[in-house]
Structures are given as C-alpha cells and as structure tokens.
Image (cartoon, rainbow, N blue to C red; front, side):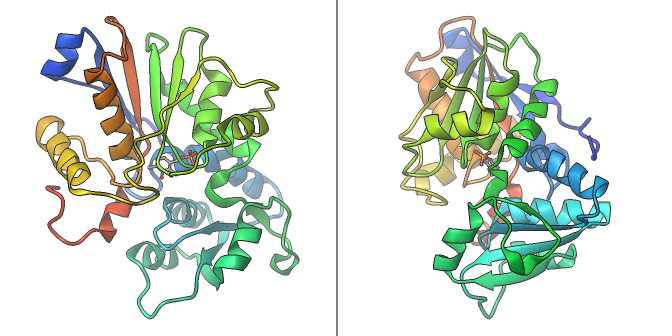
Length: 298
Ligand SMILES: *Cc1c(COP(=O)(O)O)cnc(C)c1O
C-alpha cells in the first residue's frame, strides 16, 4: 500500500442484542487510517495513484460534489505523493466553499466548477475530456475496474472466519472489489445509500468482468433514509447512540445507514446463530462537517 493501513483494526461490538441472537458483529475500522484519506477511498484510488506515479501522467483529474469524500481523499493522497490533482466539481462555484472543498484546495487540488448537465456527461465517462491534456482521469467515485481491483485489497485485512461482510453502497465499486477476493463461504451485503440502485448486477459485472452476478452478493434496499445524504432524527439518534455505546463514530451519509441496516436485520433474525458479521467502516467522517454544530455527540 502507498499509505500505512496498520491502524485499520477490527473491533468486536458488545451488545445484548448480538448476544441474544448468537451472532458476533465486528467493525473493520478503515476510518482510522487517516481522517481525510480514510476508508474505502484510499483503496479504490490505489492503482490509479500507482499508475500516476509510474507514468509521466503526474496529474490526476477526478470528479465530485461539494462534500465528496472521493475528492477529499484524492486531493490529500495526491498532495502527499507529490502528484498534481484537478477536481471537477458539480455545480457553480458558490460564494462560500464547503469545508470539503476548502480542504481540497489546502491539499493542493485545483478546482474547476461545471454545470450539473455538463458534469453528468463527463463524470461517469472514462474517456479523457480533451481540455485536460496529459492527465489520468478517475471516474466519479473511482467507478472503474481499476477502482474495484483496489477495493479488493480491503480483503487482505479481513479475517476468513467472517461469514458476512457488509458495506455501504454508492457506486458499488467497493462491493465489486470485495466480490473479487471473497471466499466462497462469505456472504457480501451491500446497503445502497441512494434511492435508485436498480442496476447493481450490471455494475458488478462491468467492474469485475464476471459474466454473472456472484450468488454471494446481496443488496438491501430500504435503508437509504430518503436518498443520498438525506437524514432524519432517527438516524442522527442512532449515530449518537452508537457513539455512546461503542465509541464508534459513524458518518450520516454512508456508514450510519449501513450499520442501522445491519442492526435492524439482526433484530429481524436475518443472521443465523453463529454468524460472524463484519461491517466495513468505510470512513467518510469528514462529511459530518456539513451538519449544524452540536448535532452529533462527537
Ligand atoms: C464513497 C463511500 C462509500 C461508497 O463506496 P462505493 O465504492 O462508491 O460503493 C461508502 N462509504 C463511504 C464512507 C464512502 O465515502
């Protein structure tokens, strides 16, 4: 790895509910790698960064919204590795930049703002828009087979005794990566944080090169709380409860929805007794900075 990932430990959570159901629930703390380049983003970027270092393409171009964990991670990683980075940001530049974009600038990222329409066309196209010249383009969220291969490196940190591995789903690149390296007895569960995730099969196939959807991949819709970055009081309460009970800091966009789903499904007896469940803490805590002060207990 290009960064030290030894702080990404697995912690078991102690809870009456899990004891009662005869299951063990642990969290792989990818968020502990680094406050900004934390979680799954570092892994998804891995092979792009290696490629940029190896080749003459020292400038990385990528895409994101005003609170994008992916932009934040890319800016930081490029800064630390001596690579130039350009962030194409969705929407017009506002008078006050988000805390995320300010941090991107501090890390040396050049920001370019484009209209939402132009963004939609550019962000998911892997082909290089001419105006960027000699650059390595990373699609939004690292959605690319190379991003999935990087995410597969997360499995090097996963003990083979785990029977279920759960992760939040945005572009599904992380889940695809897990599918590349999972053992046959490991069930993979993705929890979409967006309302419309109707093309998961196509995504997994495109990202992995598999011709059929792996049987071990499962998707739990119904935990998006109204859509991307939407939240309600129950979710905020849940985050604060997890902090008080386990000292586990969750982000409201991704990991809180994932862990809420796992807890809910544990209550509903989804996991057979003896299950050893691993939840990926995919990071993203910088995103909590968009919440009003004192919303969270940490
Ligand atoms: C980006 C992100 C995800 C989603 O990952 P995908 O590979 O796009 O599915 C999950 N959790 C966090 C914290 C993220 O920032």
